[in-house]
Length: 257
Image (cartoon, rainbow, N blue to C red; front, side, top):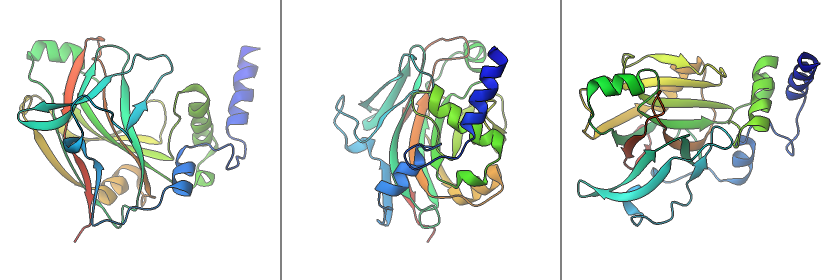
């Protein structure tokens, strides 16, 4: 009986959908938000927010219902105003919906810092999961996806707090994977990771990045990207559920000129 119920759920998950019953939340973004037109799009303006104040338009992104959210707040660090993430248990992301044409604004810039800590403790706590993440959500045509991908997107809408966009590309800091490694989420092929920092050499330092989003998406997914519909950061507890902390600076998109 249980197997039959799972099969029926999967079949329902892959059925045709309507604007009122979407498989992905990115449908709503492209319908309601205008495409950003400024020369420089500041997606994350943490340096201009008051310490301890509201984070709008950013909001919590719960990967699992019932998780204790990561604490995100703006604070002054090293004489600058940045976003602090403190994950004590459970873990969650922080994201905002935004509509960006990556062909118009392909250059993504940001910086982050992960506190220095003893190597043996770090290996035990963070050997498999990212120390820090910056995620981009992309829109696309779900009708072009196969049965399995559509089913997993529908299940994500049903079983998680937020669901998924059409595709997600996450830039991550890993402990044991070389920079440049691309790997897939074990749960869905629509989420892929690109390692942009590795190891412990730059722990305790601000690390600056400048990435070509279009080139990175092509490398990760083998095709051109649709519009960007969301930007997020995420720090969660370690592999052994120990608390973790990280800091994120402003996040901007620029033209390729």
